[in-house]
Length: 400
Image (cartoon, rainbow, N blue to C red):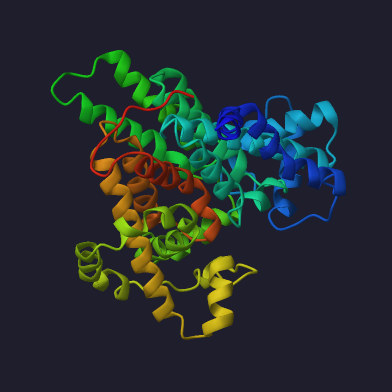
């Protein structure tokens, strides 16, 4: 009895898990000092950051036409960091790793807030599952912009769910200034707020708070006369078209794989006969938009869609549609379970955000497994919530 109590106390000691979550970062730093060859998008991100680092306030011409499609906050912020500590690439990677560690801590606290105090292991397990997902640690050890964006989104989500809408709006605006496709989070919050206030008028202050993240992005949109800088890449993207349901289908099937660590806790609920029948009725949506390689007009050096696509290609070759379809069904069933869990919750921010993420990629110019990093925390939080309460009942959150 005493040993069991001690174990529970240790599980509740979140500071101990803070050290555990830091372990992979400390190991990589000890072994490599983050000093290894430049990789992937670092080849463009690094020189652009050096360009921004030449100025305290970047000039209009640089903001208008730097050679990337995403918003510039990461380049500017890390450019300022470089002015302080030097522009060695390993130092920028350390900055990303620190943000990654803080992101895990925020996610851990969000999991605890949505789970039962008697199931402390659930928050630990979910955080480990996020950290060990194929792209999370990879994006954490290189100077990529995914982690800074995800960090800002987790800050915004934490503040939104803590009923601090102004601070949440500022954080969501920072995420938008890091990568445009984080727009699904403030859009989901605005929609959720309007849903809750449908019987009452939203006053001027509430409306301004809802619009603040978009207002923070507006000056750049006006400068660019579009949603990305005026450069060669924007002209290439215009050639790929504007509607891509096959991208949505690929992300759904990838969800079926990358969310498995949490979904296996809900196997009995996910594979109910009625849900299998419902998923089968959706089958035409897949066969009308079978996932395929990214458009050739982008001239990408890699023709696959990420680790999952690479694995399926090696095993099945050109006969991928069938395994694609089976994984797509699994993704549909997992997302169905997510929405069933959230159906009983008074707060609809998380399901609205998930819907927004997939809906947004209908209009994306390319797709990649890594993009799921932005929505996996939302899916995981919902599955944590479902496993931490009786089926069909909402329960009060456990304060962190």
